[in-house]
Each structure stands twice: as C-alpha cells, then as structure tokens.
Image (tube, rainbow, N blue to C red):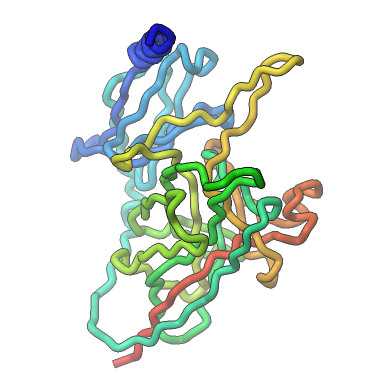
Amino acid sequence: MKKLVPILLLFLAQYINSQTYSILDSVQKTPISYATISFGNGNGTFADADGLFRFSKKWYPDIDSLYISAVGYKEQVLSTPSLPKKIFLSQEVDELKEVLITAEKKRKFKTKKLNSEVHNDYFKCWLPTVESEIAVFFPKNSEKTTQIASLYLPIKIESSNKNSTKPQAFSTLFKIQLYSNDNGKPGKRLAYDDIIFIITSKDKSNFELDISEYKVYIPKKGIFVSIQVLGYADKDGKLQQTKKYSEIETRRGVVKVSTTFRPLLPFTNKVEGYKTFTRRVFYRNKTWQRFDHKYSSTNNLIQKNHTNYGMGLKLRLYEEN
C-alpha cells in the first residue's frame, strides 16, 4: 500500500496539470466528434465522441500551436499559451454543399461477397499507429446500383511472442472513412458520417463490420475505403489520450519508439495491382502515397510484395424497377 500511494499521487498530479478542452460547432454549439488535433510536427491526438481532448504544456513543452480540423469545418490554428477552454470551428460552406441524398427504395437485391485475405504471420502485418490511415480501392464492377453492406477487416490479435499463452486484452477504437477515386488515388472525402467502431482481443481474425445503416453506394469510378486508428478505448468505449511515442530508457539515453496498437493489420500478396494507399494524418498536407516500391525500397512488407491490405466487402446489387 505504501508503494502504491506515490504512484497514485503522481497520476493525480498529471491529471491536475492537464486541461480538458472542448471542440464545438460555432453555430449550433454542439460537440464535434473525433476532430483532429495536430501539433504541426507529425504528432497529434483526437477529440473523443463528445468533442473533448486533454492537453498540457507539461506533457508537450515544445508545442506552441495546435491545428484543429474536422471534416466540413475550417481548420483553426491556436496558440497553446492562450488556448481557450471552448474551441469553436466554423462550417466550411464548400464542403457542406457535398451532401449525399439517397432515396430509399424497397427493391430486391442479390448479395455478393468479395473475400478478404486473412493470414496469421506477424512479419507480414502493418503495425497501426495513431498517425497512419490506410485506404483500399474497390471498383464498381456492375451496372447495377451497388451498396456496401459489410466490410471484412483482416486482423491479427496475437503478438509475435511464441511463449504467450493467450492474447493480451485490448480495446481499440477505429474510424472508417470513404473517398472518391481521383485518377487512381483517394480524392475528396465522400459526405458520409464517420463510422466509428471497436475491435477487442475477443474478436475473430476476419472481423465483419456491418455498415448497411450508413447507406454507402459505390460511385461509377469506384470508392476508397480507409481505416484509421483513433486510440485505445476504456471499458465504456470512450477514447483514451494516447501519445504517438513511448519513451524508453537505454544505455545510450532515452529513445522514442512509435506507439503501435493491436490488432495488427495483415497485408497480402494475393491481390493484383497496387490498391492500397497510406498517409500520415498529422502532417498538414496529408499526402496519400501508393504502397509500392516508390513509397519505400526498404519496407519489409513491400520487399516481400505484400503491398495490399486484404480488406473484403459484402455487397448488395439492386435489381432495377
């Protein structure tokens, strides 16, 4: 008990020194969920479902500005010494014009499945970090109206430790976003709501995510479906504050190691072509790069030609009236 008291006091001190901030719509005064808070140096964090995030100069003494952004809103740059408790974002008029309206019709449809590619090889998996987003392209291969009913997301729960008897418990919050096809790469974000979901250590390796309620239809030029880590969630499903780097003490001094999240994402060599793109979301330009030899000549996955994330789909092909 005596050993526990100093630890609790340290945790309490960190909690007190941190400040909670809220991100709100400037007109409706409602929370903006999962907004991006970039530090402008490749690091950053996310607001939670209630638009809340924590920041402390003791945590990040070298950060002078925060870049706050969310889909449909103008980016705002704020000085950390004078950071207001309530941060209001203005709506981006050009973005709001891109609203998708679909008339719901009761029509017969056939179900088609595009299989995912699942494997259990740790060394052929992407190690997700809070800064990375992965997008996979799917063409529209039918003249019929095509809706995405489910996503099949290959995951690897276990670690590479052969001595491990059971998976380490975790609960990770992910976000799915949808993009148009801009000459073979992810283009403008399509005007669907963010799809937020949790994967835990109890889930199966071919994780099925039902997105039928979002009424996602594949455009004529195809669609990019992206998956992005938000961070670990608590027992109530709320996003926890996560640093990009873990600091590890070595004989040579403190080394920063990227914080990675379970589950890992299996990449495959069984998909033809290069259909997977990645980007680092905390860089302001957020440039997409195709995951091929131009992306990196030393990347282990690319060297082994495992250049695609093996996402699959369940489709609904509607009959015309």
